[in-house]
Amino acid sequence: MSILLDFLKTGNLGLLHLGMSFDEIVDYLGVPDGHLAPELNDIWVDNVWAYGDGTRLVSMYYGCMELRVKVVDRRLTYIKVMILAQLEDDLKNHLLIPDVLSGYWLELLAMLNYNELLNYLAVNEIQYIERRLIGGLLYLTIDTRTEGSSGVQIWVEGNTIDLITTRFFEF
View 1 (cartoon, rainbow, N blue to C red):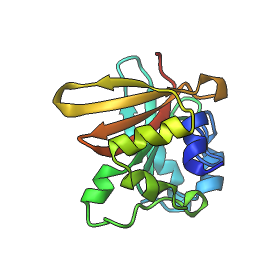
View 2: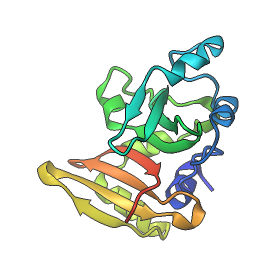
View 3: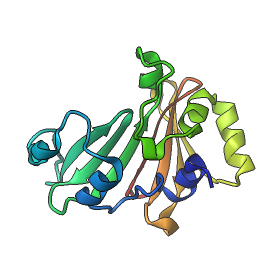
């Protein structure tokens, strides 16, 4: 199964999956952007997101991919792949991602317009819920709870795919 299709059906991105430990992530993807291996302890001070419920997450970046790891147990809780921002940047044809996750899937996703995305989901028998927000932004939610994440969301701005995420959330 292709990386994209597997991600949409399971929430797993290659071997990367929610609940993975920080050490497993670094073993699989390498050291996050902007850090050197001996300085990895600094990551627990920098890039900390604090939420109203007391949850604290650390962001790690790998090219156009952001991972968030819980500070308390150092487990992966969120995967985001940013597409539109990368296409609008100087990196137009360089959607950067770790080599172990490379392949044509990201470029394919970046080239799809909204109707083509819906067709891709239909052909692959992937069911989704569409939610429209103010200003033309919309997102599709795919239920993957049977596979270990609670769902994948595909955010669309205008007619272009903006980003894809997976995390645990309530439907």
